[in-house]
Image (cartoon, rainbow, N blue to C red; front, side):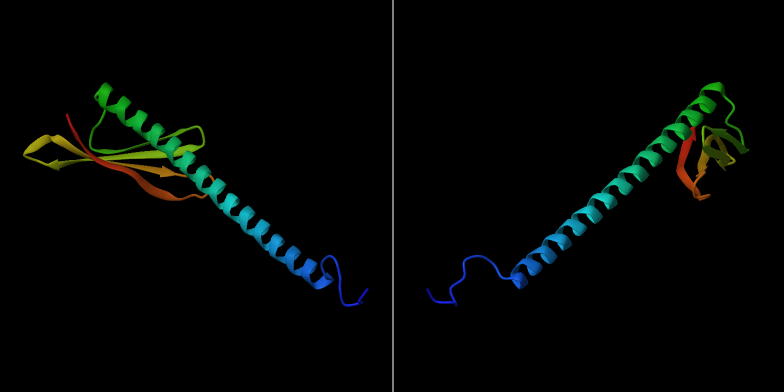
Length: 118
């Protein structure tokens, strides 16, 4: 039997295949981690939207939507509703801007900007 005939893989071939497999596994974990983070942010924004939408609906139904600002807290979400008449001649159109301040980031951003007809 000739000494140059080998059955199996060399050490170098095994190391290269393990390196490629490791890189593929790390890449897969990074993609899943990024996807989970995006899902968490989407769920948080959806929850914030539901809170401010419910608060706006409550204020419209109770007739307490006047010029000025009202703020409050629901759970860990701080919110602020800023309202102002859009046109003095047509006072039944009110511009509404709802802000949310995130507890974990302190970010103050307008979540909803809309026009309400009274």
